[in-house]
Image 1: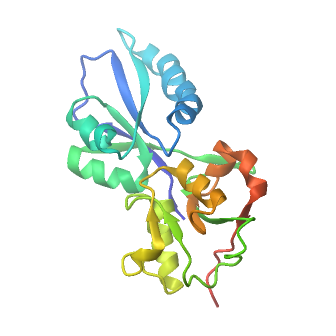
Image 2 (image 1 turned 45 degrees about the vertical axis):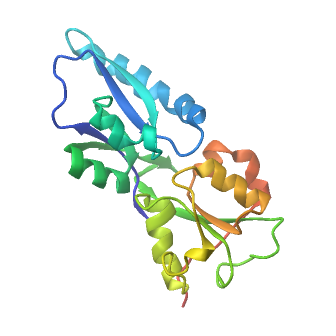
Image 3 (image 1 turned 135 degrees about the vertical axis):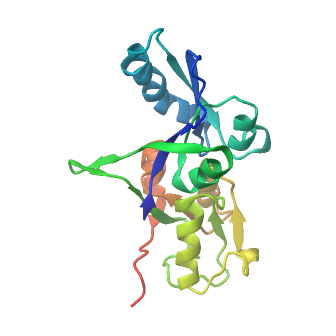
Length: 223
């Protein structure tokens, strides 16, 4: 587990601006992300926060990821973003390089309690007979995210080391997806990779119809 998604503000925020842009990290399908988060980052913030200013300010949400033309680094450097909404692992990079400061951490209500962590799931396809448990990773093809991701790289890297797999040393077994979780999930279901690491809750929130076709593996430490 680690800290979840964080909203950060550029230290040198434009004080004379009436429209502020939030760059939201898109884990796969851009349209799904915007549909889910625009009501909060555009409508709610504009109504509840923007109206407090004179003149009133508005907020707009745009998708950002780690593709070359649409990366946080490029969009910040080009002056296109005032705020960044991204996982904590990514925030460390942009805050150091571009002087962003954290202002809010996303929390999820679970059984009436606020929870601000993120977990990592190991999934495989039920139709794939090759990998049925999380104890033997020999010759297993493994899908991971990008190095800044806590749930899809950092936690998996630590877990795999405990199972005798080094992401760098055993690179022939590793497929990097650079944040495209939708493609990672699709490749698991289609048999292109045997297992993949995805953030807990992401599948249920974005592709709930795939849950019956998946196997979720126990990641408890070996004793």
